[in-house]
Every structure is written in C-alpha cells, then in structure tokens.
Image (cartoon, rainbow, N blue to C red; front, side, top):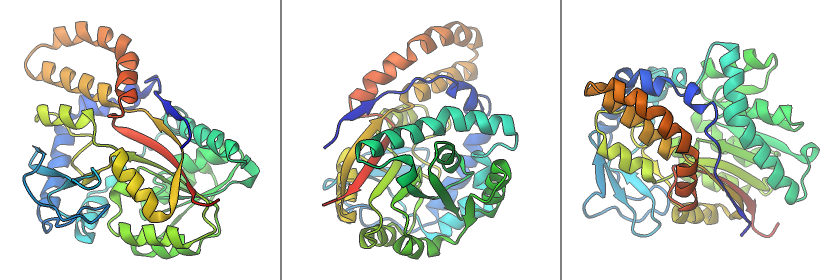
Length: 345
C-alpha cells in the first residue's frame, strides 16, 4: 500500500460554502424534502457494499433518518433503500444541480481553483509515480456535474472528458468551458459505457454514494481490462456524523439528503477488491471542523448569541486547520480521495 497524505488548508472554502451558514433554514427545508422522498422507499435489507443482511438496532438517527453499521465491512447504511424513484425525486424533480453550480463565471473559476485543482494535481502526482505522465492519461469522469474536475484535468494537460445525467449541468459545464467537454447520458446507460470505454483512468468525484445500480457499475469496471486506474472521492462515516446528530436544527451537509450510505476504510477496501483493484495512494482531508464551526455559529445565532458568535469565530478559524489535521490523521475524517490500480498491473 502506498503512502498516505493528510490535510488540506481551508483557504477560501469558508467563502465558497457561505450558503451553509446564511441559508440554514432553506437548506433544512430542502433536506426535509429529500428525507420525505427517502422515507417513501422500501427498507434496506442488505449492506450496499458487501450485501451482509442488515439486522439489529440502528447505530444512530439524525433528522428522521436511521443508520445501521455493517458488522462485516463497516459501511454505514440508511434504513431506507436508494432507488430509481428516489433518484428521480431528488435529482431531476428537485433540481439538485442548483446546489452545486454557480451561474457566475468568477465564482465558478474560484470553486474550480480552490476545490478541484488540488484534486487534479494530487491525481497527476500519484499517476506520475505509477509511470503515467499527463499525455498518457485518458480520463473519463463519471457524474461530472458542472465539469469542474474535467476542466482542472484538461488545464493540467490531460485528455479528459465527462459524462453526466443532468442536461442542465452538461450545458452549463460546456458553456463555462467554451467547448464540448461533457456529454449527457442516462443513469441506466452508465454501466455499459464503463464496460466499453477505452479510457485508462476513470474518476468518480462524489459519485459512488449516489449510484443506485452500484453493483452493475462495479461489475462493468471489473470486466473492462482497459481501465487501469480508478480515482474517487467519497463521504466517510466520520466526526461530521456525530456533530450532525448532536445539532438537529442545523443542515446535515454530510449524512442525510442524497447521501443514503457512507464509507469506511474497511468498506472501501472491500469495494476495491470487488472491482479487482487495490490502493495506489490516498489523501484524507475532511470538513469536520468546518461543520462543527458552522453548527456552532448557526446555533449561536438561533439562541440570540450573535455577538458571541462574532467574537468566537475568528479565534476558532485561526486553529481550524490544525484541529482538522488531527481528525484527518485519526482516520475518522469526512472525506477520502483514493487512487486504485488494477491488481496485477
């Protein structure tokens, strides 16, 4: 297993994520609609990753959602199953893409630079150690959203394109790029696309936790020997989950909404093995301390302590990176970036 990297400075993330602070009520309402959609779905009977039967009492509950810890692989599963009906309700009907794309070019470029360029640079650094230079990388980004990661990879000199189910996001991404970098597809077509692609690197940035037909996607990647590497970022069962469960009047950024299950190091290893891959490098950095800071600020405003919030805020922000690095190194942070290589390569 290759070396691990930990930590990432918060930098301008506070400004980019400002809506999480200023629009807590509106985002809670959005999350409640998504919870309504999930509660309409059948009960989950087996773990999303290892298929172990779900039984016993839930580990915890948060904003009407109950979560079970898989005893076999450590994956955290919501009580209700994610289905095509759930997907249609929260992604297409609820205009989910509006939460992740800015119509203003300056904001778009700032988000690309602060959030996605570091991911792309990490991937190139790790692939270079694997013997692949930028000109040898032919990347397909699945669930490409508004095209941020594809843009970052192209700016670094790679051949990168993306696929996305949202027509609005595809049009937005191509308009921002000034060229056709994304194409629209149906979710049901994605396994076949992955099975037939001749791209040697696949990326899934915040995608695997949203895929309904995950078993089909795993099988497609496993069967396509032309795919040598898979780069992914996923939400992890982490400190953020604890903070969210303890602050029920704050928006759940991490668990809940469209995240119906969360990974662990154990379930990620199980997941990789099912695809026939192994770890080639990881970068662990979370937003746990940012989540805690946000929740404290929101709660202070809610109970009339705005002056204390203003006094406390700069002091907490000055140590936030140091605190988060401790969490990252504890292996209980909210996000993992993982590069997988095909076994035997």
